[in-house]
Length: 385
Ligand SMILES: *Cc1c(COP(=O)(O)O)cnc(C)c1O
Image (cartoon, rainbow, N blue to C red; front, side, top):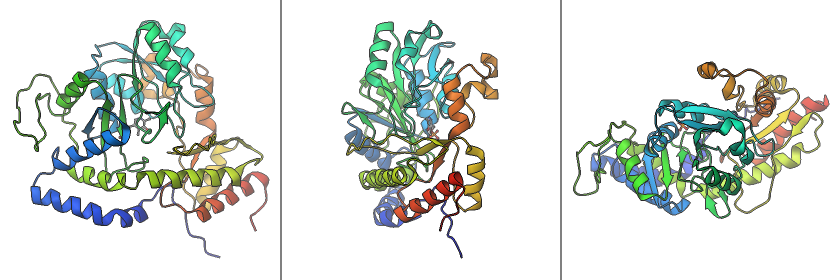
């Protein structure tokens, strides 16, 4: 019996679907002769502003740089404390350090995997100037409660909404509940490029202008090549964090099928839910709300025997990822903050137990059924028929 393998991620089929539109964009780039920070980037920013409802979208070269630029443009001063969850991708906290600040780790909510709103009232939050909640996998942090607490304490609220494209709470897109947020277009994200790219989202005109300057060596004025009156005045010490037009063309073509992809991912998540429900040893399945706009970036389960299951799935040709195998407060790069195992028990438990199963636009329900059969058989000791 031969079994085809199921990779953790693939977008080959999606690219077949969008190829004509992508080809047109690439032709335009060559006709223009401008490959960075030019017409396709401007177009993408407009399209994303429309999609998210943001007043401003500033295209940059990665989600990580989007965070650094956002923090700096919000006036982060050297040593400023920024509340971040202890369970996230490392860039949530490393961006704070790169921007000159100091991350203050907090434990997560066991239901959403996000920062608990109560965190802001706790002792650890004393002296913090910023709060940076993260929206992970398929759930947003409780932004109404976080906004209320942040306002009460005078904290500046930002969002690491790198995983949040398409996610909305109370009708407001992720990244727009505070001063600003970010998007990542790393290839495996819900809206992924063919390399690195990212964006800052904000409704604040001055903040948008500042971020736009910081991404381009600190130059002010309308610096996109398709705008007249290019300014070369350099007011800030900036970065080179511009977006490539090739990535923008890819993202524009994929944005046209994004809602379709999101619906397909939600259908696959429901198929996983049906296939895995009540499996002994699986201690957590993602909540399915059934809302028509539910977004699954990652389908993450928790199991008692995570590492053995990863090895077994690998032997069966099924790709997995462990998001995130080490909580941030125990990463060597944050050693000087002085944390120890046991400081944030919810984050630590999730790091030991969590496992992401394949979920992407190219994946079929038949493939999900096979993954479920293998995962169930592993936990029940029965080999699938
Ligand atoms: C992907 C991601 C980032 C970083 O984005 P890049 O585009 O890879 O730099 C930051 N935070 C979170 C939560 C992410 O998932």
